[in-house]
Image 1 (spheres, rainbow, N blue to C red):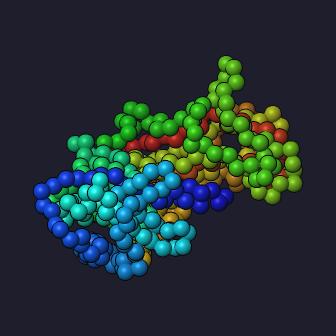
Image 2: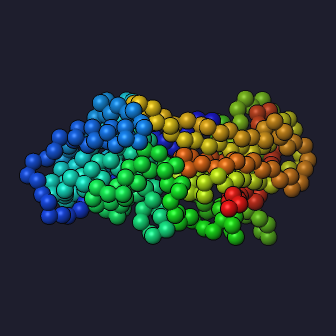
Image 3: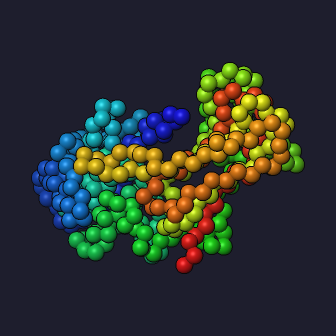
Length: 340
Ligand SMILES: [Zn+2]
């Protein structure tokens, strides 16, 4: 299951945010100032980081095939294992007229992408301000050296720093625990067919519930066929129980059968940068559903969810050597908040 390479290929993310202010400086600062300053800030928080290998350059414009940007952080520049930050000097971006704190904000945000493997995060605190400097609204984070700045830098280095803040969650989980329920038209599901050994369909037959199917006619398959969906930057209360659930039906499977899997990832920071790591793998593959069965509900629970989690992946799997068709309905992610 190597789908993560594809997903993380998109790790090159960006920031918009030109800002105007009165404090102008005529010369552009050496960008290493901000790399060094970030090392210092991390050190104050107990992290011994070394950003000497991080490239930081001014460029005329930061361009992608689709757009142009004011800054860019690459965690793996052109797949060369280079961490690189580019800051655009294009007048429309305003770098030349930004004050030191504004430059720091933008640059630290790019460090988030390039060194800490972070993606944009638009979660909010209870007062509506961004929860993270990884927001695209960096102008609404901090504008001077104060407590807010301390918080945003702490959260940048360690997402768990937000856990004791008043956070605006996507919903009130105590009364509405179903965070996600699979629906027709959700474009974030992908099917892996193992070179067409498996057929996957998603749809809603007349008068029936939305379902995914997986079918195989080849009993000699060596890999799994599966549907998968990723949830990035899950914003759940700290230490919630997060349950992935699906109901499975089959008329007659032969071989090992079908199962569900949940994977959780984080990006622990070492001295030379964060590395993606799977920290939890849950599966019903040890007890797959096979033969003929109806409304067999399986669930897997991530106990005591942590904000360190950068991604959760849920997967519907047909195991190698299985033939027949299975249908998965009521695919849900449920968040049970810890009793307060
Ligand atoms: Zn960005």
